[in-house]
Image 1: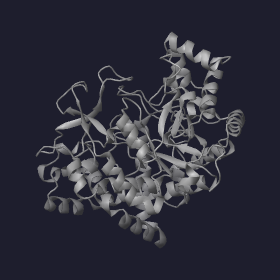
Image 2 (image 1 turned 135 degrees about the vertical axis):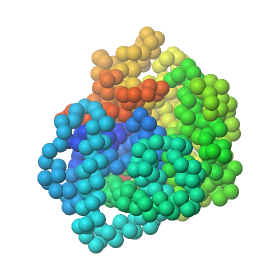
Image 3 (image 1 turned 120 degrees about the horizontal axis):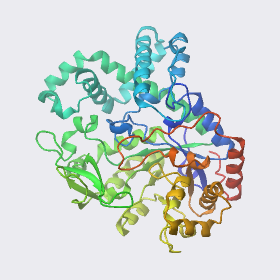
Image 4 (image 1 turned 30 degrees about the vertical axis):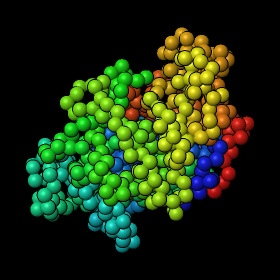
Length: 513
């Protein structure tokens, strides 16, 4: 399974859409038949890349970028129908499903309904699973012991003992991880621990099946790795010395970005910063394990906020905005040298896309180029300045780049155009010369396709020319994000033939593996 680096990093195109955005009867997209049908759509449209958001469990605000584990996967994306096929649920168990909206994820009732079915499946697995399934489960647990044991214990404590409360509010012996307390908790919450391990095992089974199918159709899976992890996570709780925390386990400094395109006060993310000096002592082993997990899941990995590996914005933990932060140098060269050495025999070059948006310095670009990582170009960003030398205009792209009309953090292209300044609207109309708003979106896609960028990737919402109501995320807005869903029957033959024609005209037909 998978592709060689040389096969992957050839001129090609793809679509950005998260698993949760797929159609389906259970209120949220999952790894079931609709995911396979989406692969079939990509294959028919000559697309070679399917980019998703982080697969990790969602945390605050249902964000996949604020997860309580950097290693685990989101059990809400498990296919219930696949659990029926595996014999862990019966047809009667899924005969009645609540009436969920098909155009958006309503997270609270989805979680309430799905967790009951997942618990039923676990109990059935314990009682009735085949010996080969139990053997595979034990092998998975052994192979992933380095992160799985801590994650399952953390999740069992958080959800079962502490009713979702963050770990810094737990009893002190568990908060600080004393051996006696942890050993006692493992015995007391053994069933809950095994339940969470089962969910991770099932996700691995379902995901690897989907990835193998995609690869067989010539479609590579592109994943996403956020640079930071959430404070309230198994990673921080079980590796406290690797993060900038005080003696009570509280962050001393937190992550964010200074004032930028998205916010006049910057973005205060609140994630704890890494203790890079401690991590260097073992050769950045935690990062190596994290990348290993990503390379196990994906063919290519997009590293979010890449500039943070050259220098990061450090804000005192008691600040209310990100304005009063400072830039601090990061060990990017040391880190990626260690990663390249670890994975060189297996992968050759690191199959990584660098999200290099925001305030990018010459040093950030030099770090990216030193490790042969293509950067990102957002087509929507190219028309405000009116400068023909603007780096985001497609005629200025370098080959080692990935072009997007927009990302999950941008409005849809139609929504962007309708809300853009008069100057930007005039610039884009003169540049692309569309005959209508719908054609503007397709001309933007066409411009990306015909650019010299190595990859051209487009959100599914733009392929469907949807307006701003289909936006995935609005940075700085706490609620109402991550809910977009593709509706049944929305993809037409027209979308397939038009994408395929552009791929052929733009010479983006990637070779098969």
